[in-house]
Amino acid sequence: MSASEQTAELGPALGVRRLQPTFNVFGWLSRGLTYLILIAASAISIFPFLWMVISSTNTAADVLKGKSSLGSALWANIVSLFTQVDVPRVFGNSALLAIVGTALTLTVSSLAGYGFEMFRSRFREKIFGFLLLMLSIPFAALMVPLFIMMASLKLINTYTAIILPTIASIFMIFYFRQATKAFPSELRDAARIDGLKEWQIFLHIYLPVMRSTYAAAIIIVFMANWNNYLWPLIVLQTNEKKTITLVIQSLASAYYPDYGVVMVGTILATLPTLIIFFLLQRRFVEGMLGAVK
Amino acid sequence: MAQAKLERSEQINGWLFVAPALVLLGVFMAYPILWSLWMSFQTGKGMNISFGGLTNIMRLTEDAVFLRALRNTLTFLVVQVPIMLVLALLFASALNDSRLWGRSFFRTAIFLPCATSLVAYSILFKSMFANDGVINDFLRFAGIISDPIPWLGDPFWAKVVIIAAITWRWTGYNMIFYLAALQNIDRSIYEAARIDGVPAWGRFWYLTVPMLKPVILFTSVISTIGTLQLFDEVNTITLGGPSDATLTLSLYIYNLTFKFMPSLGYASTVSYVIVVLVGVLSFLQFMVARDRRR
Image 1 (cartoon, rainbow over the protein chains, first blue to last red):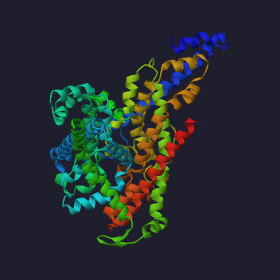
Image 2 (cartoon, chains in turn orange, yellow; image 1 turned 30 degrees about the horizontal axis):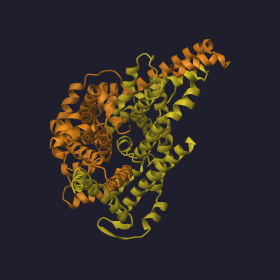
Image 3 (cartoon, each protein chain N blue to C red; image 1 turned 90 degrees about the vertical axis):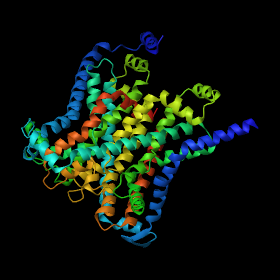
Image 4 (cartoon, chains in turn brown, purple; image 1 turned 90 degrees about the horizontal axis):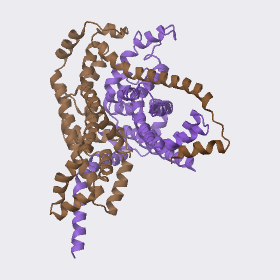
């Protein structure tokens, strides 16, 4: 018997009045209000996306005048963007950085998460606690020394400089450690009896079993890398190295931005993450929540 | 003998698995943060620096631009984070009702802004809030205003735009955490309270909020850390203007380091203000959450 059934029986016996009839009127009102709020919130959430698509078909002047209907400048905007910017190159730069960065982050962080959970030692637990404290170090406090470091290593304007500081992510180590708690230790014990080495157990047993954990992590890390702005802004200096995020930002920060053109670029920059979002929404949510559970 | 050997191999393997991450974190996180602590006591411009003791900290108290950046950052924090978390909590508890029609549509729609990059959505907001732009058009159409609001040209309204933008981007993100936590709560508690005549607001305040306390704490800590580091949005939408009204600490550090003649020591001092703020505020939030439990 559930708690509600118990209370339902106890209610009248204890002299609690049932408020059902008046409750209904109030219930209808609050239901209506709930829908109203949710519809307004959804409209506000979706509108900027519509605005992005509409504006990409308008001229800069129309965008600034707030024209909210489709125009006929889409093709002109596309042509203008592709003549101002080497789009395939810039898009490729972003993709390269995001893919390589994600692969390295996942490798290093999952190894560490696995290591912290599977091989316990008091000393390493202390280090882990220390890492959790370091989680709150803001990037703003690191960017000056990191920049000097990269400059002295002659790594300014290289992708190495961008990727190196992002490989070991405390958040991802934490995420993988949490996920590893669900990895059945019988599998490991059986593999040990079969004579597999520890790295073989990780590669041939842990990896395949934890596929969905990796999938969620890929989404989170890929999106973070693809959208990264401040650090690439500091490190990258020549145009042929720049990412699409940097390029659309600099187009938009011109004194008179050509907004129609900027919007085409913004669509291109948002498309990969939007596609991931819609195809893998459930995994995406799992990944976000994974580290908290 | 065999036992000792096994234990040693466990130790070696444990270190091997975590070593790459620890080395990288040491070189690119622990070392820089200590280095910047040392640098924060150095004064001078460019490469011409010397030990200045507390000079930089004294300079902070007299630097009007820094004080404005600090005030702006704290304003964003104090106004924006509560608005966003309350909205997220309300949306989550509305969406937690399984009888709600169109539930997954609403959830996806409100969560959708998370799929944009900070720069991309900042560009959208900058264009929407132009003087003759679509937001002013809408407000005039709805009869709320008669003259256009100079959104990005006025110190007050520029702050409003930044706050609206961040709220748009992150409310759905926080909502997802609350939704997940709400789904773990036994529904029969609500039924029992409802039958006992506890009104909706009472159920929200006396049941939902206390049970979600750990998640609320988590989201408020990460939102605090995020807001204290605010950079992409202000750099794209307002560049810190008009007249430094939206200048944030991160943007000021960036300007000190890369825009003006670099004064790296002083920039490090400012960055430690953020470190201290993050530490103090996270600690306070933990204390508040613990006190309420008693």
